Image (cartoon, rainbow, N blue to C red):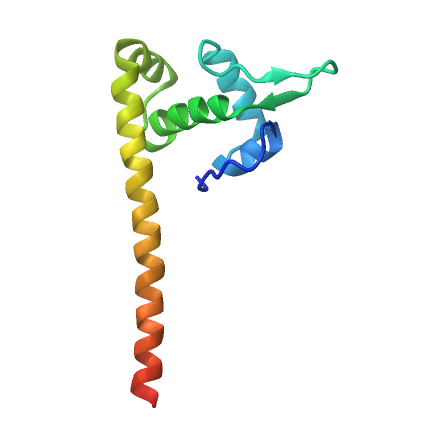
Length: 120
């Protein structure tokens, strides 16, 4: 899953699929299965347009299904039983992944600097 930085108000289904590295058909399927939380805006022509709250809902489903390995039934039950806990846990996981990514970049930069110091 790629980091999400809000740059626009509405995103196409393809843009959202790329954010999560999934097929657009999976997003359409999740929309049917989790229609209480994933409700993209539809243009007059029926084109799906995802708002930030839709993307956050997809992030929750992605976390439960793809990262935690729950079935769709299990993910629905988890969201029904305690959505706040799921949201909080996913936010922590997302933050930790972001920190890990930043630390990895810093590590690479330090290693590169060490190479230059040792070669000089």
